[in-house]
Every structure is written in C-alpha cells, then in structure tokens.
Image: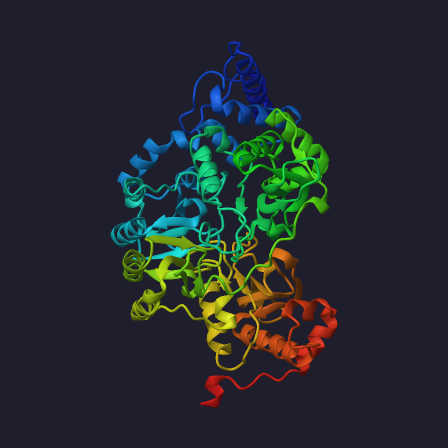
Length: 609
C-alpha cells in the first residue's frame, strides 16, 4: 500500500474507470468528472489532461472496460492512453536531433509514423510506406529512390503488402525522411503498430482483361478515410484490408481481416444484379485462418462505410490485455460470425445485404505467372511487364532505371504486387522489346523459372530483430541450388518467413519454411539457423494451410530437402496435370517423408566440380 491507501493496481483501475466514465459522458455531451486516481504517479511521457474526448474516447472506453473487469492492460495500451502516438511527433523530432534511437515504448509510438527501430539486426530505422492499391507514379517511385539514397541504405524492398520499405535510416534522419516522402505525395503514417496497414488491391486494376471491377477508386477511398479518421488509429492490434477485382494476379485478399472480393450477382435473388463485393472476414494465416465468406455482399461504393463499421466493432471488442489474442480473428471466434455481423450492422446503422451462395457467379481462376513476364492488357495494343525482383530487393540505381522504363515505354505507373515484385503497365507492342532490353541492362529480368517466380521471403535476420534466419539469403540459395538442376512444368511457391509473425505467409506456400534455431547436439547449447518445413499450402481457389513435414532442418540442408520433395512429386504424380499441392494433399506426412527419403537428389554443383 502507498501513503494514499491505494495499491498501484487499484490506482490503475481507478484511472481506467474514470477514463471510461468520462468517455461515455463525453459521447453524450456531458462534462467529464474527476481527475487522476488518488496518488497516481505522473507518466514518463506527456499526458493529456481532462477527460477523453473526440476520436480517442472509443478506445479509452474500451480500455476502461477491461480494467473494470479486473484485467490488466498491455504496456502498449497504457502507452497509447498516456500519449497518443500521433501527438508525439514533436518529441520524435526532438529525439532525432540528439541522434538517439527510442526506448521500447517510444519505439512503439514511432511506428505510428512509419519508423521501426530494427536493432540489433541493424542499428537503424526502417520506414514502411502507404501506397493505396500498390500503385504509384514513376516520379514518386524515383522520389523514393532519391530519399533512400540520401537518408537510407541505397536500396528498397518490395513487400508482401504491395508496398515499399526503406532501410538503414540513421536516428537523426527519420523526420527528414518522413517529410521528404510527404513532399512527394507519399506517407508512412499508420503503416506500423496498432493500425490499419497498407490497403492492397488488384495490381492490374483497370488494365486486366479478366477483371470484374477496377479496385483503385475503392482502395484509395479507404486509404484516405483511414488517414483522415484518427479513431481508426490505435486499434487493439494491426488490421489488414484488401480489394480483389477478379483479375489474373492474386491479391491474397483471403489472408486479410477484411476481404472484398469482386463477384457477379445473378438476377432473381432479391438484389440488383451486377458487380458487388463479397465480404469475407477473419483472415490471418499466421494463426492458420483464411477469411471466410459471410454471405454478405456490398455495393462497391459502400465498401468504406462497411469496413469502417467492422473496424469500430474491433475497436470496441478487441482484446486490450493479451497481444497474442488481440487480432480481429479472436473477436470472430468469441462472438461467432452472426453476432459479429449484428454488431457491424448496429455500427453501420442499417442491415447488410445477404444473398445465398447460388446467387454468386463463378470467378475465373488466377494465373500464377501473371505477375511476371509480358501480358496483354484489356486495352488493345498495350501490355504490362512483370519485373522479377530477387526476393523483393532493388538498388536505387535500378529504381531510377525502372522509373525511366515506366516513363519512356509505359503509361508512367509502377504497380507493386503481393509477390514482392512490380509491373510496368501501358507498354505498346512495338516497345516491348526495347523495354525488356532496358530492363536487362539494369541487371533485372521479366523471365523467371517456376521456382523463382513463386519465391517469397521476409526481411530475415539481416534486417529484423525477430527473425531466426537469413531468409532472403537462404531463399536465393534455394533458387540457385535448384535452378538448372530440376525442370518444373508448373509453378511452385516457396515462402520463407523468419518468425511467428509470418510476414512471408509460409502457411500458404506450396512449400513453406518458418525459421527456427536448430540444435546441433542433445545439449542444445550449439545452434544454427534452420527451418520447420511445411507443404501443401495454397491461396485463391486453392486456399489451404500447409502441414509440417520436416521440423528443425538446418538452413544448409533446406535446398536438398526441397529438391527431394520436388523429385518425389515429379516421379509419383498421377498425371502431368497434378499440381504439387494436390500431390502432397493426397498423401499422409509419413508417406511423403518415405517418398522423399527414396528420392535421390542430383549432386550439388560444388560436388560436381
């Protein structure tokens, strides 16, 4: 007990109770009551005085309900209540002038501005942008390259959310980089921590011969709504939204918390026939869940309002105490889909539109090679060029060259995909050869083997403090070991992720690897980089969660393990049309291990030499 008669837990409970009561009174237009809990210690960060008002009231009320129930808020929730991260920009700039990187809670706050301290992997910030639908102009792309040259490490990474990251940013350069991005019409605001991440959409939006709808205006509308709605910042955890227009390139919308999937609604089912978005909810493949169809369809112009209502339900009911259970999936698990949709309708102020499954027309299958190579656009005589970026990395010199290609040969757009690569659109037939030649001069290509076309890797231990292995380096080693040694007649996706956050979505790969430390002996004292290897994952019309087949495999052995899987598939598939996924799904893990043991990989290049 303190000299006030209250324990620290009691004081924190009282603070939460008063905050929640004030939030409720403010919502009704009443003045707030009271002040800090008796004997409450001052926060280490500047805190707002008086009751919670305006856009933060909904969050503070949710926090208070958990405390009133006797549960302790996570440190991140307390940090957001003490000082909303968007109010901390002046402190961020002041800290930058000292050349110091932030302490843990300020590291959390700075992520609301797009800056991640990634030590000890790199003694630097990483900055993640927001690029709605993953599309930016050639001059914006060139600006990112110039910014990465001046304040970063001279390269950028394309991410699995159709986005860009700049790395190796010194402590003193963070604010200058953010402000330079703003001058280029770009922003990293809310791209990290407990916020709605970059909105993804079809990379071939507006140019795809197969698309049902152009996702660009809807992705942009949601992007701007999020940026201008402070209530939608500071959620219980991160939140993902994606729009799929029904085109040829997979958007992986089913891995998002909210998936808007373009569908054709047939006549005769009580709603206006035409193109709607089907609503799917709860995707989070790191927790082994895909977004599930709700039976709801949404008019495209209403997508932002519906997404807003869903996020507000998450704000009110998402767990503020346990970070491992704070994703939207767990709200759905707790309430069920029917009850959750009722809450969404209450937040929206009107019923959602439901149709039976037979009202929905079939969607065309995606093309697993459409993100690389040359492809005809919907516009006669024009093409998009899918550029291969080795595990998403490109130098700033290459970025300037790509901007030149887009401006000289294309329509000026750079289109990022969830496959860690980009497209250059609007290239006339007569210009394709010149564009690909210019691409080759940059050390890049539009051609890829079945393995390299589906190779995805997160940042890994070179640049992420959570990663247990060098995923990008190991991915390239796998491609180098297998290319030219094993001929595949179908695409195979290989995903390498460095930790449980599953940024590379290993569970949806044909072959998925999640990094781990592998013990070299029974003592466990000596360890090496390694992976748990999974098989049978998929996405789009073949969505499935992969199963573990080879646990704790040293990274040096991973190429041989993967080669044995591919040899087993090629030697034992029922027909030339049977996919790798179908092959592994019709066998038990024990049988698959036996087939792999029987497969004899060819000698490595080093051994052959």
